Length: 157
Image (cartoon, rainbow, N blue to C red; front, side, top):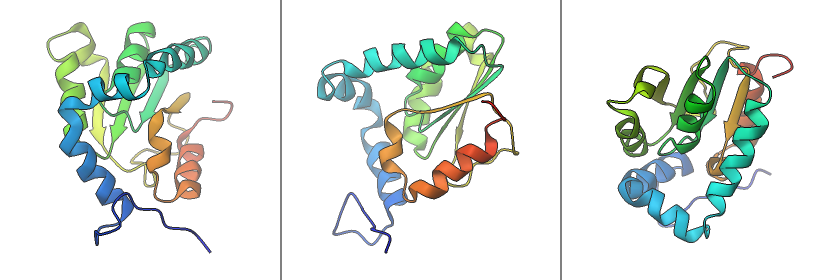
């Protein structure tokens, strides 16, 4: 039997909707909260991911649960020829991400879209590299999310 985990036990909303609302609510404070709560580990972790992915020289990168876009933005900086897409459930988080690149040379190199990791709005074999930072814990159905990632990841991606 599949165990259902929801952030708020007293809500009638499913996990996805609860997570979306939670991140919409904290989006403007998220970056600072994440640095404090993780004791800066989030920065070190991102650097490792950037190096590992950039070493493969992907032409297209999808960052799922992109949040405020820090990882996707760094990919756009490090991989100037790559198409970078950040996807998130929370429009509030995406608004913060878009503001970070607004008016910069990165604005045309990165796209932030609202979407569900369990129903990715992309064709099969669309991306050379796909990342999911801290958001994997927020998948409602982990198997479905991983299946979708596999579907849109190019062979040998």
